[in-house]
Image 1: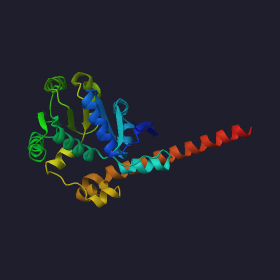
Image 2 (image 1 turned 30 degrees about the vertical axis):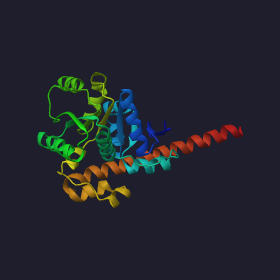
Image 3 (image 1 turned 135 degrees about the vertical axis):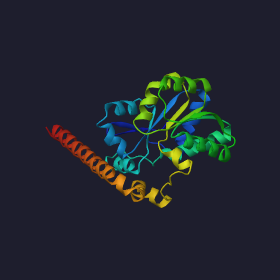
Image 4 (image 1 turned 90 degrees about the horizontal axis):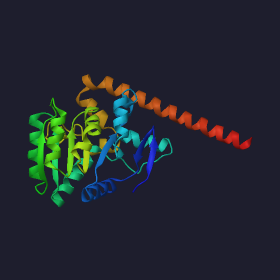
Length: 256
């Protein structure tokens, strides 16, 4: 098991993509529930103002650095993570695992048209994977949805829902569903269905996926990203100051 790094109050698993996939495979073999949470700058900022989201993230069995900004922050705070484990990339890797090992998958989220398209794409690209069921994310009775998923007994559950809805749903209903691997993939359903385009790989490596989305939707996204990036930078700066003060205090006490 990889080590955990404490970053801005979150225990983030210091693992590579391959290690996380193996962890998920072991959880399925052992029928041991593993709830995966992914963390980026926006979620850190939003969780600081939403106690429910914060608590739901801390309830996850595994928290991963979904955003490159979190990896950079880990290095600045001397809690280095080996690499970014993006939620969408893990989603694809787990679909490939399902394809290779004939595992069952349940898809929950997005619009009826999008989730149906994701199911179709899954059947074409990953024919070895078994579709346990799917439904859109616009439902009124979450208890019924959780019972439906539990009855289908999937090996993996992917939630194409926005934050904090997906985190709070998993926190409350994972004990009911008892799915070995649960992973909130956000807008990944739209990308897999071909509704939206992901940033080119070069932009991903530079940690600039947010900028690519800003270029696509400038009118809607600029205020959100400005706020998120500024507040996240302030949080990192405060943590660095706190670390420096703690170091000075320790040195002073040693001298005394």
